[in-house]
Figure 1 (cartoon, rainbow, N blue to C red):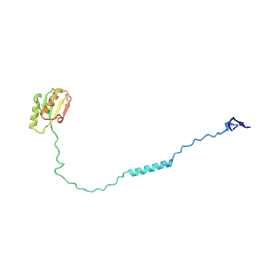
Figure 2: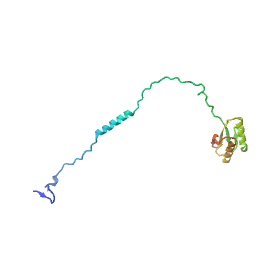
Figure 3: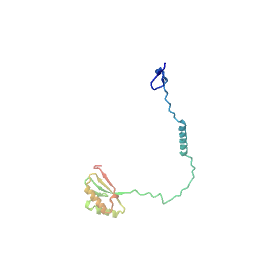
Figure 4: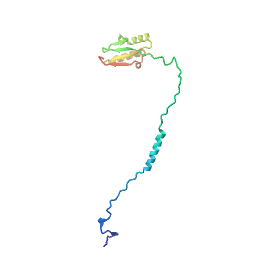
Length: 157
């Protein structure tokens, strides 16, 4: 009993009994040999680039001594205070000064103490107009504004 299909070869009389075994999928192959090669190359690289701490031999050296160098410690810079109080009063090195005569007072202090440096201490509520007058007096007396640090303090502190 043979069945012939049109345009095909002989067909099985029992199509359900054909290939009942499940198809096996191919297992992906991992090329372990090439991975081992890469690991060996990395191992050689790390061994070649690692620096091992070797015990260094020490040589005793007697360094020359200098009496002039290294002993002179610079004096701590002392600045005289130019203060603007909460009441907008000017005080130069503990002495009250009028804003119109501030440049002359600064110049007189500079003449008595050449090389004296100033520090501006002002209250946080100091008027801008008074600050500008102080800066103009400093410039007139020969002090660059950048050489006079300003310390602004909050009222009551």
